[in-house]
Image (cartoon, rainbow over all chains, first blue to last red; front, top):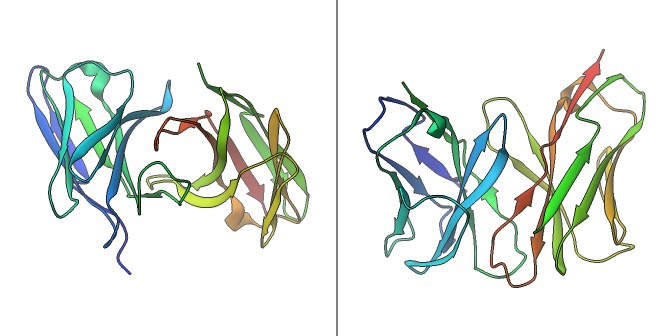
Length: 114
Length: 111
């Protein structure tokens, strides 16, 4: 069974640009959550999507947004990039939302903002 | 606000030297506590979910326990391949799938 896939794996952008990251969950999983991981702040929750609806959102500015498609694939977008947005962006998929079934993480997208 | 604190930040063990990692938490109604392992350059790998105080789970050389304020990850006779960062996370009631993570314990097992 294929795991969570994220594309691209590495990305370099400059300040002020915008970026779109993609996540394909495990087949049959309908919940996708996004996290930002930095050395200073660790893993922080961005948002969760289930059945194309945002279910929960962390404490990030509105420059961070996402969406989910009918096939459960998800994208997150960061507009007007700042140096501090450099991080590993992880997505995690699970069967449902609001329960305690396991969340499986993808390998992440490493974003560098210059 | 939910908080998770892990200690120590880093731990070096000799192969076969057992030890424990600590995860202290404060949460407004614990729904579940999770342990993950993360290798460099990879996403976290799920290890355990604990739901209530007194619960224990085991997998190979790892055993996780839970009290009302903290969780321990016991590593028995570790091997070099157990070297990784171990992350603890909590899910609060009513928080959907949002996990609050600790900063992790970087474990190095020397041969």
